[in-house]
Length: 604
Image (cartoon, rainbow, N blue to C red; front, side, top):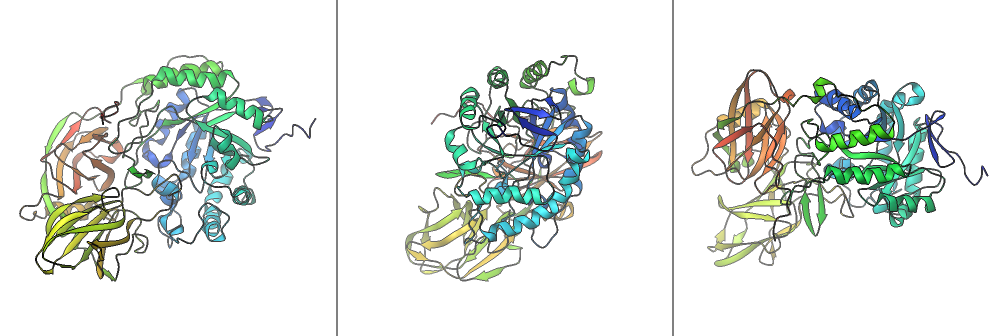
């Protein structure tokens, strides 16, 4: 009988007779995902307390490698916002167990699925495989990362009770040697708590991602009872855990805002819990894709993710407790047979916000002048972001092609992602990956002309077969059928713009007729509190608050306001700076409520 139904898991969590145990007691995981990299560190304790108040006994987090080590020649950073050990310790202090998902691939709608671009930029590498060119840098990363995590395992008195092997590999590849290597890499570095895989809730995904002797968990948002039946057939000796119960969803620019009714979420969760399953809400608290960290999907065209990662989660982006929070709290506490009770006063109180205001903006450095101010690097053909060792931000390309007489077409082959074009200093239009090959019509005069192209990286692809694709101009630029050669490139990382540099650009007068570039406004604050910034009249660009890059805005929506948490503000004068790529507005709105867009699908 023992051979037919083997126990496994030697840590605080173990599996025997298809049941999950914590120590010697049967156990149900009632969890929620919170990503430390999407929440200001001053708010970690607050968000974890809200999760615990919902009745959860566990928090789940990914580890984003690129957040810790964006450059290859700099050691991984585990301080400040990147102090994942502090986040895990705070979770333990809140009475929560911790599930860690170290990847190295995490998806998570995070830029490049969590990978530093430098680690996988060689096109010859077989990504997410046993190719030594792929596994070697991961091993070096794991050496450093696991030194942070291993001492926080339950075996050493810490809150970590489980770690994941890779992530949803059944939707990507079939290299079982790689999965075995990933598990071995964790164990060899001291991981003793239970290990698990996570894949979609069908036979197809299990076929590619599950491993013998490793707990197979599911990721799904509906039909949990059907998945449980599959698990009982395929993994009869294991308890069912939906480690990603998609109780909400994320948004792409130009699409609608996703919501899911609390009653529907609670009913679906109850089906799985009534069948003795465990669940983890993805997300319990989504947070924000601050800076340039939002990733992209690709379904025939690029689908960049918005700045907000609210995800219609039970705990909203600003920490507000939603109807879904109370529905899940009732269900979780009933499942654990705990008293419902009253919420602590400080958690039940509304989020403090700044009063509404309208701020007049002053314009600064023109976009084209800003782009041209960066150092140039020459090449025969246009070079990609990765060839330029440019991770995020923008690259400005310049060439001087000969334009014959009459109308011609400028086309870009292999554009990733969005390009703005000028001819002899005059803006002629924008292109993206769906329009770049059709191009833009220009009129030549039988002479050389200056062609400027500003390419914005909208977020590296985080999921699917195009994971790892480069950025910039991947193939070339043509006039008609002729390639344009001899280019200058200027890297514009944006993340290097601190408060002092932004102030200089905001104080520089705009060029005559400028419609894009820097603009800034000031706000006096008596006491910092949360706020939500809208930019009516602006087109597309980036917002900084006191030198901190909050993220992208874009008039195509659905997201209208950007969340600015209180820790980013200070008593006294605060500066809001934008770099606008398309057309400047005249004011910024300080609002008292978030606006993430319409929840209705736009009409075709």
